Amino acid sequence: MKVSKIYLEKVASLAKIEIESNESIQDDLVRLLEHFEELSRVDLSFFEPMSLPPQCRLKFRSDEPQTGIKQTEALKEAPKTNCKFYTVPKIIG
Image 1 (cartoon, rainbow, N blue to C red):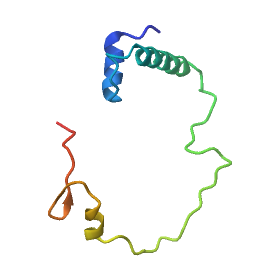
Image 2 (image 1 turned 180 degrees about the vertical axis):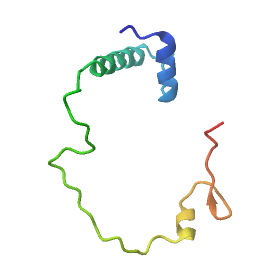
Image 3 (image 1 turned 120 degrees about the vertical axis):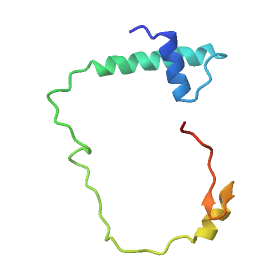
Image 4 (image 1 turned 90 degrees about the vertical axis):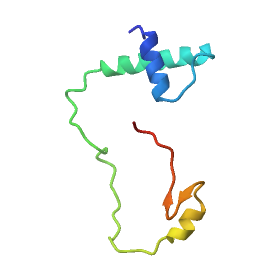
């Protein structure tokens, strides 16, 4: 697969990677995208979908309330707050 410049720029934008000034990063990203394309062509139809390998066992703990950090203590660590809430940059429309 030949990676188009538009596709490369879109992926770089989504990954928040500056690629215009660094040709080696562009080359690395192109090779990575080509590798993913090659992997997507592998036939996996004979494998049953799973969320974890069978040998993995999840350890469950009892679902009991535990004491946590107080809101005032948590807000002390935040770079910006508004009254009793965290303030974060707007990222969606």
